[in-house]
Amino acid sequence: MNNNMDIISKLSEFYKVFGDNTRLNILYELLNGGKYVNEISEKLKMSQSAISHQLKILRLYNLVKYEKRGQSVYYSITDEHVRGILEYGFDHIEEIIK
Amino acid sequence: MNNNMDIISKLSEFYKVFGDNTRLNILYELLNGGKYVNEISEKLKMSQSAISHQLKILRLYNLVKYEKRGQSVYYSITDEHVRGILEYGFDHIEEIIK
DNA sequence: CCTATTTATGAATAATTGTTCATATATTCA
DNA sequence: TGAATATATGAACAATTATTCATAAATAGG
Image (cartoon, rainbow over all chains, first blue to last red; front, side, top):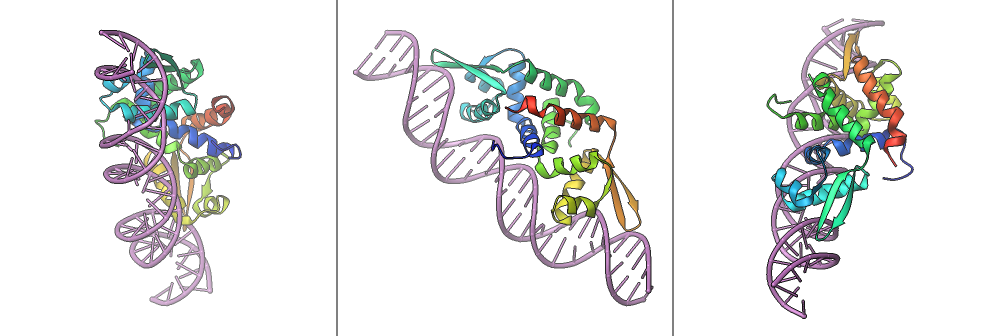
């Protein structure tokens, strides 16, 4: 996330984060409440490592926050703004995609 | 664009289209009015071929429409809905990206 | 017609990105 | 402390995607 990139470049970078099936699935899971890494991993039937790698990117873009609880790490959607963007997407997908 | 893909998969596919710098730049150019392929190519300082390949994808997702005019092809944003999505992005980018 | 111009496209290549595999780190509990 | 559990991470590999290069197709003008 270089600071000198222009606004379009930053915007496309942002869309790119949502433009991955795994990451969007993770975000969707978290819309219904925070979860531990292993819960996400089980729900999506994907390896813990793959999930962890993608969570790192979601963290980098401040789309999720996390909280250490014992051995586990609890992830949730960062704030209502991110939630709004996601819900906008889910609600309008039918109109958007032909 | 397979019909059997679930909604999240389709949504991520949709975001992916916006998640490319070249495509988003093309869309941004077209926000200020339709243009010919060579005009886009010159404005973005990119090869005609690269632009044409990306226009094909934008066409596939119905984000742009085109019209043959003599030897040239005139491209423009498909409709006000697409325009709205783009303007939402440009307007909110500051809040979205930290 | 023939040439110049504009756009599209297939194939090859380059670049980027996601997943796996192996392992490190951190924490809990016996 | 040692074993078990949960998560993170680097490197290798696989997969995907963007660009270039060469060329085809379509049209306009001489």
